[in-house]
Length: 270
Ligand SMILES: NC(=O)c1ccc[n+]([C@@H]2O[C@H](COP(=O)([O-])OP(=O)(O)OC[C@H]3O[C@@H](n4cnc5c(N)ncnc54)[C@H](OP(=O)(O)O)[C@@H]3O)[C@@H](O)[C@H]2O)c1
Image (cartoon, rainbow, N blue to C red; front, side):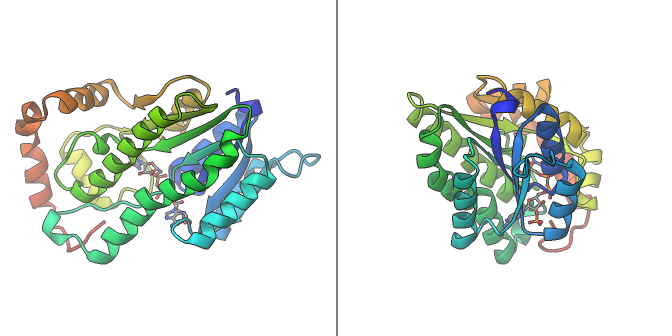
């Protein structure tokens, strides 16, 4: 869909990638409902986007927690009022560290945010999206949802769940007006990555993209028929190869194990 026809609901809008996507889509002519938990950053983002004063629905803000039933219901109501036709499930939380250090609270919060909330929000919005002339759901995944990497076992599992959910949804809605898409970034320079993750990525030679570069890719994908995309050629190839012959890649993670050990992580670090 062309950006000027898009009325977008964007979760995690005040985050590193979310705010870059918001800026890119606004520049391209989309209208936006910015969703997040923290009012301050969301309002200042909305202010910086400076919607057309004649069009007060250009950019709107909704402060909710997507893991709650009432939070998702508020998003669905606001989306209906705005005649939304695009949902971008972008909000997520990270978990990084040795598998044995995974803490129950973080594991639950991560699975609720990264998996359950986008599934339930999508389910709630689908009837409305199906009634639009054209609509799109774009889920933001990760390379780590296609290639299991030491240190990211639980987070990778959450993104793998989102990837399979997206794939099944795409097939289920193939004959509908709703286009289902999945975009998998590699590392991005945002606060999502703790100093430990940044050190780990550096030690393992994992490349990182700017949020602006990823946001351009996301905007480009929305404007295309593309079903699934991975940032980076090497990462795209690794995802394909891992899908076919996972054992071929098993020997490639020695440096990741060593980096994980040498970081002397605190329990439950994320
Ligand atoms: N950064 C990377 O290296 C990287 C790599 C690959 C994929 N990704 C994916 O890219 C997406 C964006 O990541 P990012 O780097 O922009 O992370 P980020 O800067 O930490 O932003 C994540 C946003 O999600 C929101 N959020 C978290 N829990 C929420 C909840 N329960 N309800 C509502 N909003 C919630 C947060 O806002 P509030 O705290 O204000 O609610 C935050 O603004 C995620 O899906 C992530 O998995 C990131």
